[in-house]
Length: 258
Image (cartoon, rainbow, N blue to C red; front, top):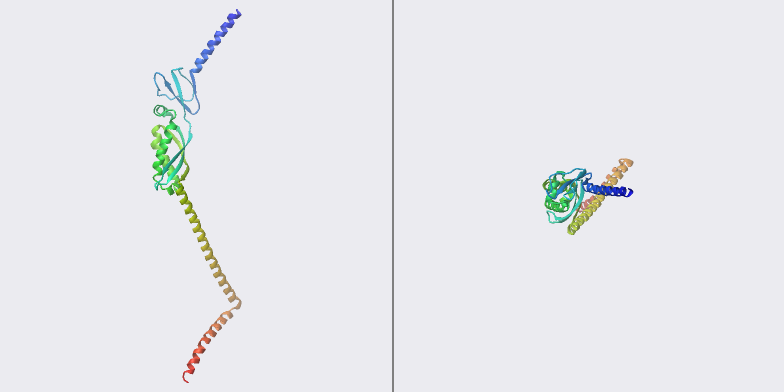
């Protein structure tokens, strides 16, 4: 009797394990921020997007393909040319996610690795077209305008075509070729030298003005101390100089009649 009971328990346990395995293989989970589509071996990919939670499928016949629909960053480095034919190295940081309603089209036309196949190509295309409209100097001074134009073209014209959503993007790195960098450094040195020369000239002018002001102050103080005596003294000195100049001339005139 005990042997039959143990045999029955063993069979029941085996049946329960098989049933648990079948049920477990018929369940799949879709995590938070994810979506799934089902690949059916007989019907292909039905136009159904499965939301978050635990769901059933037919084992071996159906297979869940789960997509992460949360925003993810990706850096795309691009080497291109500016309007004045300068080499420009740009790294674009993109915050992207697939559109939940477009997962079927993304999977059937591009594949699960859509970001690897799609983002580098469309980003390079847009950056080359936008950067070619600006000079190297404008890329620095009008960086916000360049970033906004790249964002508009990339979001509206290219990413939306493939069912992608770009939440944000920014120009992370912007560098130029060796020749342009050396030219910019030389220009900065020349500007610094010009500023230094201008400072020296302004300082000399200020010192000259300060000397003139000091001389005027000394004259004013002398007049205030001596009163009109200093002016009279200057008049007497001037009269004496004139007299000395006239005396030789008068002597010559007096000797002429003799």
